[in-house]
Image (cartoon, rainbow, N blue to C red; front, side, top):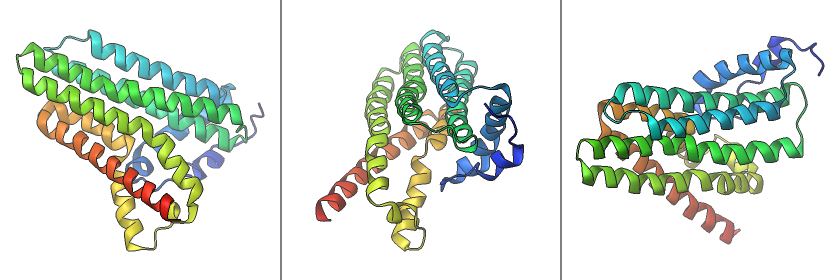
Length: 236
C-alpha cells in the first residue's frame, strides 16, 4: 500500500456525504485519525471492518456476563465497546476512499458487518437492561425492554436495505437540503442515527424509561419512513 498520502488528504474527506450532525462533530473527526494511522501501518479497510465486528461481539458478550447489579460499570463498558465498533466501522470507509482501495468485496463485507454490528452492539443494551431489571424484580419493565428491543433492532438492521435502495433510486431527493420536507427528513435522520442510539445507551444510567421511550420512538419513525418510501416507490 502506498504510504505517501498526508493526513490532510484524510481530514478533507472525513464528512463525505454525511448530513448527520453528531457524526460530523464527533465520530468522523476521531475515526479519521484511526483511518490515517491504519493507512500508515498498512492495515486494509476490510481488516478494519473485521475489527468493528469483533468489538460488536465483545459488546454483546459483555451484556451477557457483566454483573446486573453494577449498572454504571456494565453500561459504560457496553457503551465503549459499541462505540469502538462504530468508530472502526466509520474508519474503514474513510480509509478505502482516501487510499482509493474501494472494491465490491469490501463494500459487501462492510455491509454485512454493519448489519451484524448493529444487531449485536445495539442489542447488547436491551439484553443488559433485561437482566438488570429482572435482577431487581422489575419484571414488567424488563419484558417491555425486551419487546421494544426486538422491534427496534429489527427496524435498525432492515434500514440498511431500505435506505440504500432509496438513496440509489432517488439520490437528488436524499441528498438535497433545499425543501422544507427534506429538512424535516434530515432532522428525523439525525434522531434515528446510530450515534444517537449509542448515546441513548448512557441514558439508561439516569432514566431507564426515557431511554426506552427514545428507542421506541426511533423504531416508530423508521416504520413511518418505510411506509413513505414504499408509497413513493409505488407512485413513481
